[in-house]
Structure formats: C-alpha cells, structure tokens
Image (cartoon, rainbow, N blue to C red; front, side, top):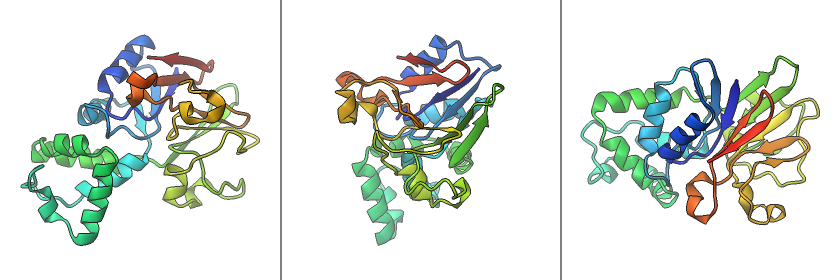
Length: 237
C-alpha cells in the first residue's frame, strides 16, 4: 500500500498512532510531504524515527528548509544557550524568524543530540526531495509537493520551479493544476479554508488534494490525516 501524510509538526505520538491504525509495515510505502518539525513537542524524535524507516520518503517543507539554514555549519560546541553567538547578523535574522515560527523546541532537541547524531540527522535532511511523482498500477498519476505550486504553468517541469514555489504556495479552493494527474500537498491546514467551515478534513478539489488537517492544532480540532492512494481511503487520528 502507498500512503501519504503531511505537516506532522513534531507530533510523534500521533504519527505512531497513525502507523498503528493503518497497520504500516515494511511492505508499504509512506510519503511525508514536509513539515516534520517545529511547534509540536517531539520533532527530533519524529525525524529520527523516520530516518530509520527505509520505506518512508520525506519531502522538504518550509520548516525543514529554514531549519537547514539555521543548523548547517554550527560547531559541535553549540548549545541552546550559546547558539546565537555563531551567527552572522544575516544568519541571526533567519534564526529569529525560525524561532518566531515554532523552531525553538526543534533547535533545543537538535542541539541536545551528540555531534555524530547531529551530523547524521543533518545529512538526512539534506536528502529530502522537493517533489515526487507517482504512477499507480491502474494508471492514476500523482504529483507530491509540500505546499502546492505557486505560479503554476503545466508547461514548466517541476524541476524548474524555484524552491519557494513548492514549499510556500497557498492554493485557493478554486485553483486548477494538472488535467492528467492529481497534485497532493499540505502546508495550509484545510480547517482554515472558509469553505470548510472549520472542519479538519482532507480537501478533495477537482485537480488537487490538500491533506494538511492541522495535526499540531489537535486541541482546536485539528487532526493528522493519512491518505491511502491505492483506494483513496482517508484515515484520521
């Protein structure tokens, strides 16, 4: 079976609960469309868990992108207490933006790792793809990105879009994408769409599917969603 999740945002317990619910096994494949980190209470344990699973395929989200900017090049002696000493003024601006966007717990947990494990995790993050394309046995085709596609043009290959167009787009419910394949993304919690009236459910539009149901906002009704592409069944925890 092939599954897709997105925007887990450090909710490692919810992720493990979902894996149990779908009976995820080594015979299955799971694509996670970015934003593993920030906001939730266990972003680094979530990353380390997924890093050990050979059948989990990670895509880069905007939160991983800014994390990479902030942790790349940090020396082994960096700690949560002294980390700001190692940034240039420009780097400090990026770091401050990350902290304002929920990065504090991720940075603290990352810097709590021994240097060797930090290096392994950093190497893993650098391997994240920006998009994926899938063709199912029945011929159905899917394009996977973190956020949709800003400035979409069907004549532009995915590899030619700037990074920002694939990790920071904000598609509206009436937007159209490919006619011959379905775009799947997260990034924008579906409960924020006026048409959803606060419902945290996977949004099936004509040419795309948004699977971000606001997992980290669980107390406000958000859910972690998982879409099984084989039969298009949706699971929630």
